[in-house]
Image (cartoon, rainbow over all chains, first blue to last red; front, side, top):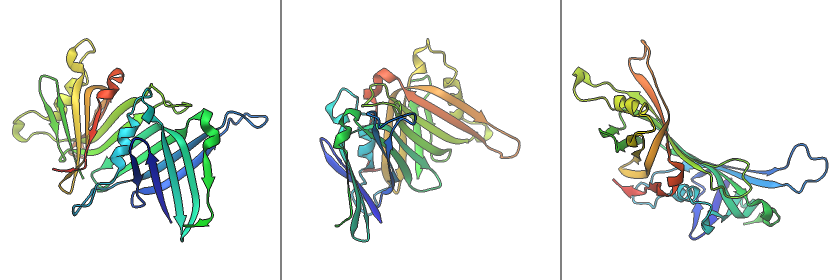
Amino acid sequence: MAFTVKIEGPETFEISKECVKSVKVTTDIPLDSNARTKDVGATMVVKGKILTAVGGDPFDSTRKLALWSVVPAEKADSYRKVTAEYVAAGIMERKYCFPNAFVVDYKEDYGDEEGIGTFTLVIKQKKDKISTVSVEGGYAV
Amino acid sequence: MGFRLNVTGGSDQIALDEKSIKNVVFDSESPADSNARATDFGISMKIWGKMIYKQGGEGSDATLELSKWSVVPSEKADCYRSAVVEVVSAGQVVRKYEVPNAFIMEYSEEMDDETGVGTFYLHVKQKKDENDKMKIDGGYAL
């Protein structure tokens, strides 16, 4: 069971399976709807570790998430394509794709006890582009 | 994992290191109900640590300076200062956050007669209209 999260924008980077701990995808619908709403949102919450590179390995790409989180709304690259893949026992169980995702919240957390940092990324698909969100799965990798 | 905080722009430089800082949180937050990327987002840093008093009263205790900064009125220029936080691990700088126009949102100190050491909590935010000046660096050897 492993998750990888790929972010495609001006540069493409991947948050590796060593880093990603959990992925949560929710569809947000107003609870007071009386019929199928037009007001549907899609949110993804990715949690993971911030690892220190040792032995000359390249650093993990979590810093690029932090940089994305401070891109102002006026810039085109505040929207990026995010793909989260969940592979278990050689099967692609789920592949979520948000083609126009923006950052709602980004947090990095460090303590002097854990030895690693943790991050929490909350992204949403641009609401008027909700129809482009894709969910696939159930095929061999 | 060790943390270093450096605050410049006031009358005295404030420096705290891994001996006193216990936790660091970086946060980039926008309203949770945004339908598209918000212009209105805030960048904040939260730091928790121990108040290490100087033995024999030599030199000044950095948390005393933090405490003084937290009561600087908004009319004074030095209520905005530059704060640099470094996260160091295994001889490498994992992150270096530079908040060039930081102001204090929250500051608290707590002491009691049991623990022998006090703790502080500092919450600074980048001045919102200067958000683009925030720098996030890291991934290099110390």
